[in-house]
Length: 285
Image 1: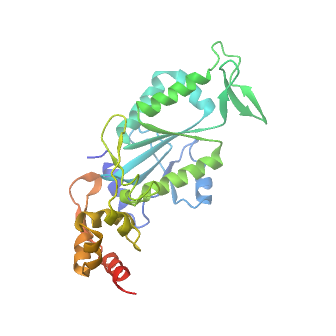
Image 2: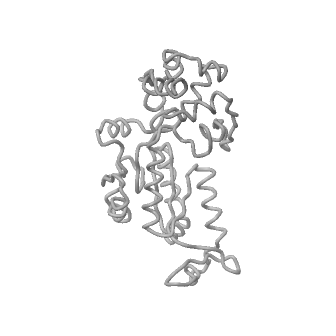
Image 3: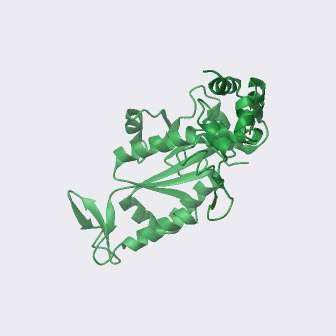
């Protein structure tokens, strides 16, 4: 069972769908008008109920059902302070790992390495060293390696933005991406990277599945898209697909949808309108 649990069920029962929830406290709430401006359904909420320490959260669609996505937002100065605070920030990271299925760390600001490896930030139209008066100056590599650990070990998606406006844009499109059904993501080709399947390995290795001819043809039919993979499992050849009846198309486009969190409560769905549309497109002039 995924961590989303009761929060997922509670939010998915709403007729309005899954809003992007922002913590009402200072440091998070200033995002609300920016998100509303770019058209995101946003709600203020108390996100510290389960010691989650997130600034934003929403319910999305994962590979095995509903997932809870949590976002921690910091500017570069806050990030450095948290890094050097030691155990307190480790506790925050750990709590997000317990609560959220998908975790993001969003860091605002512009920064780069200086000539001697020091951390340079953009302030008032120029590059300056961050906190040069400190006994131990902040190094660019220190920040880079910290974010690598957050990404590779704690499995956070690390996102850099220039400021609050870009943050709102990044959150908008990330929220929209997670509202799609998993099989609807086709930016990388037919059904993913040629129908990419993620292996459950520590490095997230991708196993490429080459789509056959039936899959490629079916995916181009109006309304079929990612369902082309289902058609390729039913029809052996393009000829079988072209000569199939509407009833056979309905059988091909009958799929089992998993329940919330990948558990029980799933259902079998037949895409009858899509089946009829595919048959007409193949058979009528």
